[in-house]
Image (cartoon, rainbow, N blue to C red; front, side):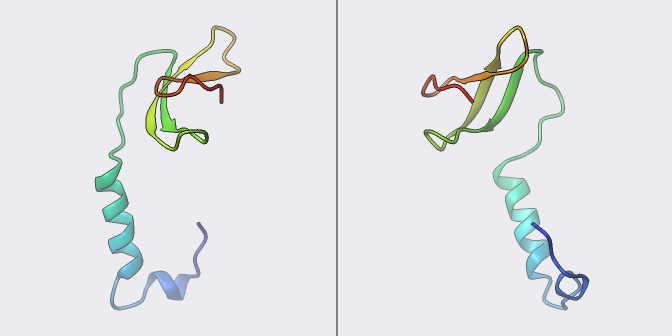
Amino acid sequence: MRARTAEVRRSDGLMFQRYVRSLRAFPMHTTQAPGVDIRTCAHCGRRTQFHVDPEGNWATCTACGQLA
């Protein structure tokens, strides 16, 4: 998402509050097992683990089994 500087610096801080709220909803994990990626599935909409294939080109959603 791109925002203008004036919009970010507004006195009410609404954009910053939204940013902090989204970080709390989906905290960033610094350590992950090799071959595992955590993201939102475009097919089922869940935020879950994806197992990456050995070539590193495709990943499979653990919730619905679709490739991404």
